[in-house]
Image (cartoon, rainbow over the protein chains, first blue to last red):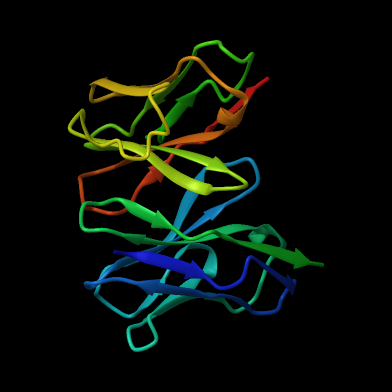
Length: 112
Length: 114
Protein backbone atom coordinates (compact mmCIF):
# COMPACT_ATOMS: atom_id res chain seq x y z
CA UNK A 1 0.00 0.00 0.00
CA UNK A 2 1.06 3.57 -0.61
CA UNK A 3 1.67 6.06 2.18
CA UNK A 4 3.47 9.31 2.88
CA UNK A 5 5.01 10.65 6.06
CA UNK A 6 5.65 14.33 6.54
CA UNK A 7 8.43 14.55 9.05
CA UNK A 8 7.58 17.96 10.50
CA UNK A 9 4.17 19.16 11.57
CA UNK A 10 5.37 22.75 11.75
CA UNK A 11 8.30 24.62 10.19
CA UNK A 12 9.19 28.23 10.89
CA UNK A 13 11.61 30.26 8.75
CA UNK A 14 12.54 33.90 8.35
CA UNK A 15 11.64 35.76 5.19
CA UNK A 16 14.42 35.43 2.63
CA UNK A 17 15.84 32.18 4.06
CA UNK A 18 15.54 28.73 2.48
CA UNK A 19 12.57 26.46 3.00
CA UNK A 20 12.80 22.68 3.43
CA UNK A 21 9.68 20.58 3.98
CA UNK A 22 10.43 16.90 4.34
CA UNK A 23 8.42 13.97 3.01
CA UNK A 24 9.09 10.25 2.85
CA UNK A 25 6.91 7.88 0.87
CA UNK A 26 6.19 4.19 0.74
CA UNK A 27 5.04 2.56 -2.46
CA UNK A 28 5.11 -0.90 -3.96
CA UNK A 29 5.60 0.52 -7.46
CA UNK A 30 6.95 3.64 -9.09
CA UNK A 31 4.78 6.32 -7.54
CA UNK A 32 3.24 9.57 -8.66
CA UNK A 33 4.00 12.17 -6.02
CA UNK A 34 2.60 15.63 -5.47
CA UNK A 35 2.88 18.63 -3.25
CA UNK A 36 -0.27 20.63 -2.60
CA UNK A 37 -0.55 23.91 -0.71
CA UNK A 38 -3.51 25.15 1.30
CA UNK A 39 -3.71 28.78 2.32
CA UNK A 40 -5.97 29.66 5.27
CA UNK A 41 -9.64 29.13 4.51
CA UNK A 42 -8.87 28.12 0.92
CA UNK A 43 -8.94 24.94 -1.11
CA UNK A 44 -5.86 22.97 -2.06
CA UNK A 45 -3.69 24.06 -4.96
CA UNK A 46 -1.23 21.87 -6.83
CA UNK A 47 2.37 23.07 -6.41
CA UNK A 48 4.14 20.37 -8.40
CA UNK A 49 3.96 16.78 -9.57
CA UNK A 50 6.44 13.94 -10.16
CA UNK A 51 5.56 11.15 -12.57
CA UNK A 52 8.80 9.29 -13.30
CA UNK A 53 10.28 11.81 -15.69
CA UNK A 54 12.97 14.20 -14.38
CA UNK A 55 13.78 13.60 -10.72
CA UNK A 56 13.99 17.34 -10.02
CA UNK A 57 10.56 18.84 -10.43
CA UNK A 58 9.94 22.57 -10.62
CA UNK A 59 6.63 23.95 -9.47
CA UNK A 60 4.88 27.24 -9.08
CA UNK A 61 6.05 30.16 -6.91
CA UNK A 62 9.69 29.07 -6.98
CA UNK A 63 9.18 25.72 -5.27
CA UNK A 64 10.86 22.53 -6.39
CA UNK A 65 11.13 18.96 -5.15
CA UNK A 66 13.59 16.18 -5.78
CA UNK A 67 12.58 12.54 -6.06
CA UNK A 68 15.19 10.31 -4.43
CA UNK A 69 14.33 6.67 -4.83
CA UNK A 70 17.24 5.43 -2.71
CA UNK A 71 15.99 7.51 0.20
CA UNK A 72 12.27 7.18 -0.62
CA UNK A 73 12.05 10.93 -0.19
CA UNK A 74 10.36 13.80 -2.00
CA UNK A 75 11.38 16.91 -0.07
CA UNK A 76 10.04 20.33 -1.04
CA UNK A 77 12.42 23.28 -1.18
CA UNK A 78 12.50 26.96 -2.01
CA UNK A 79 15.64 29.10 -1.97
CA UNK A 80 14.08 32.17 -0.40
CA UNK A 81 10.87 32.28 1.61
CA UNK A 82 8.27 34.97 1.11
CA UNK A 83 5.60 36.03 3.57
CA UNK A 84 2.95 34.79 1.13
CA UNK A 85 4.36 31.25 1.40
CA UNK A 86 2.88 30.87 4.88
CA UNK A 87 0.38 28.02 4.49
CA UNK A 88 -0.10 24.31 5.04
CA UNK A 89 1.70 21.97 2.68
CA UNK A 90 0.66 18.42 1.89
CA UNK A 91 2.81 15.69 0.42
CA UNK A 92 0.65 13.27 -1.56
CA UNK A 93 1.07 9.92 -3.28
CA UNK A 94 -1.32 8.55 -5.87
CA UNK A 95 -2.36 4.94 -6.05
CA UNK A 96 -2.78 3.21 -9.39
CA UNK A 97 -6.51 3.95 -9.41
CA UNK A 98 -5.96 7.67 -9.11
CA UNK A 99 -6.82 7.98 -5.44
CA UNK A 100 -4.67 10.46 -3.55
CA UNK A 101 -3.20 9.55 -0.18
CA UNK A 102 -2.37 12.66 1.82
CA UNK A 103 0.27 13.23 4.45
CA UNK A 104 -0.73 14.91 7.68
CA UNK A 105 0.50 18.29 6.48
CA UNK A 106 3.28 20.70 7.45
CA UNK A 107 2.38 24.17 8.55
CA UNK A 108 4.90 26.71 7.28
CA UNK A 109 5.28 29.99 9.17
CA UNK A 110 7.33 32.84 7.72
CA UNK A 111 8.66 35.49 10.08
CA UNK A 112 9.42 39.01 8.83
CA UNK B 1 -12.45 27.95 -16.68
CA UNK B 2 -14.07 28.81 -13.34
CA UNK B 3 -12.53 25.81 -11.62
CA UNK B 4 -14.41 23.48 -9.30
CA UNK B 5 -17.44 25.22 -7.83
CA UNK B 6 -18.91 24.30 -4.47
CA UNK B 7 -21.98 25.57 -2.70
CA UNK B 8 -22.76 26.68 -0.15
CA UNK B 9 -19.41 28.00 1.11
CA UNK B 10 -20.65 27.99 4.68
CA UNK B 11 -23.46 26.07 6.32
CA UNK B 12 -24.67 26.21 9.89
CA UNK B 13 -27.40 23.79 10.86
CA UNK B 14 -28.86 22.06 13.86
CA UNK B 15 -28.37 18.45 14.77
CA UNK B 16 -30.87 16.20 13.03
CA UNK B 17 -31.31 18.41 9.99
CA UNK B 18 -30.55 17.32 6.45
CA UNK B 19 -27.55 18.94 4.79
CA UNK B 20 -26.86 18.94 1.05
CA UNK B 21 -23.52 20.02 -0.36
CA UNK B 22 -23.14 20.67 -4.05
CA UNK B 23 -20.29 20.49 -6.51
CA UNK B 24 -19.75 21.38 -10.14
CA UNK B 25 -16.53 19.84 -11.51
CA UNK B 26 -14.34 21.36 -14.18
CA UNK B 27 -15.88 20.84 -17.60
CA UNK B 28 -14.37 17.83 -19.36
CA UNK B 29 -13.16 16.17 -16.18
CA UNK B 30 -14.35 12.60 -15.79
CA UNK B 31 -13.49 11.90 -12.15
CA UNK B 32 -14.94 13.58 -9.09
CA UNK B 33 -13.88 13.21 -5.47
CA UNK B 34 -15.41 14.22 -2.12
CA UNK B 35 -13.11 14.83 0.84
CA UNK B 36 -13.61 15.80 4.46
CA UNK B 37 -11.01 17.78 6.41
CA UNK B 38 -10.87 18.02 10.20
CA UNK B 39 -8.14 18.94 12.63
CA UNK B 40 -8.18 15.50 14.19
CA UNK B 41 -8.23 13.34 11.07
CA UNK B 42 -6.76 15.55 8.37
CA UNK B 43 -7.97 15.04 4.80
CA UNK B 44 -10.08 11.94 4.21
CA UNK B 45 -11.42 10.70 0.90
CA UNK B 46 -15.11 9.93 1.28
CA UNK B 47 -16.11 8.76 -2.19
CA UNK B 48 -15.12 9.14 -5.82
CA UNK B 49 -16.84 8.79 -9.16
CA UNK B 50 -15.56 7.94 -12.63
CA UNK B 51 -17.87 8.91 -15.50
CA UNK B 52 -20.68 9.56 -12.98
CA UNK B 53 -20.43 6.06 -11.48
CA UNK B 54 -19.41 5.65 -7.82
CA UNK B 55 -16.20 3.63 -7.74
CA UNK B 56 -15.10 3.62 -4.11
CA UNK B 57 -17.28 4.74 -1.21
CA UNK B 58 -15.27 3.00 1.49
CA UNK B 59 -14.51 6.33 3.10
CA UNK B 60 -18.14 7.25 3.69
CA UNK B 61 -18.48 7.28 7.47
CA UNK B 62 -21.90 5.67 7.79
CA UNK B 63 -25.31 5.36 6.22
CA UNK B 64 -26.19 8.93 7.12
CA UNK B 65 -23.89 10.00 4.28
CA UNK B 66 -24.85 9.59 0.64
CA UNK B 67 -23.48 10.99 -2.62
CA UNK B 68 -24.87 11.16 -6.12
CA UNK B 69 -23.65 12.28 -9.50
CA UNK B 70 -26.67 12.48 -11.82
CA UNK B 71 -24.64 13.95 -14.68
CA UNK B 72 -21.11 14.96 -15.59
CA UNK B 73 -21.49 18.50 -14.32
CA UNK B 74 -23.10 18.05 -10.91
CA UNK B 75 -22.69 16.06 -7.71
CA UNK B 76 -24.23 16.20 -4.25
CA UNK B 77 -23.14 14.97 -0.86
CA UNK B 78 -25.99 14.60 1.59
CA UNK B 79 -25.94 14.08 5.34
CA UNK B 80 -29.22 12.99 6.91
CA UNK B 81 -29.55 13.33 9.83
CA UNK B 82 -26.59 15.56 10.62
CA UNK B 83 -24.66 15.32 13.89
CA UNK B 84 -22.18 17.71 15.57
CA UNK B 85 -19.28 15.35 14.77
CA UNK B 86 -19.97 15.95 11.06
CA UNK B 87 -18.69 19.50 11.46
CA UNK B 88 -15.78 19.84 9.05
CA UNK B 89 -14.71 21.36 5.76
CA UNK B 90 -15.90 19.32 2.80
CA UNK B 91 -13.95 19.56 -0.42
CA UNK B 92 -14.88 18.47 -3.89
CA UNK B 93 -12.15 17.83 -6.46
CA UNK B 94 -12.10 16.74 -10.08
CA UNK B 95 -9.54 15.28 -12.44
CA UNK B 96 -9.38 14.72 -16.17
CA UNK B 97 -9.45 10.95 -15.98
CA UNK B 98 -9.13 8.12 -13.50
CA UNK B 99 -5.52 7.43 -12.61
CA UNK B 100 -4.32 10.75 -14.00
CA UNK B 101 -3.50 11.83 -10.49
CA UNK B 102 -3.69 15.60 -10.60
CA UNK B 103 -6.84 16.75 -8.85
CA UNK B 104 -8.24 20.26 -8.82
CA UNK B 105 -9.94 21.27 -5.61
CA UNK B 106 -12.89 23.52 -4.97
CA UNK B 107 -12.85 26.13 -2.20
CA UNK B 108 -14.70 23.85 0.20
CA UNK B 109 -17.89 24.02 2.25
CA UNK B 110 -17.40 24.78 5.92
CA UNK B 111 -20.12 22.88 7.81
CA UNK B 112 -21.03 23.50 11.42
CA UNK B 113 -23.64 21.29 13.06
CA UNK B 114 -24.88 22.62 16.37
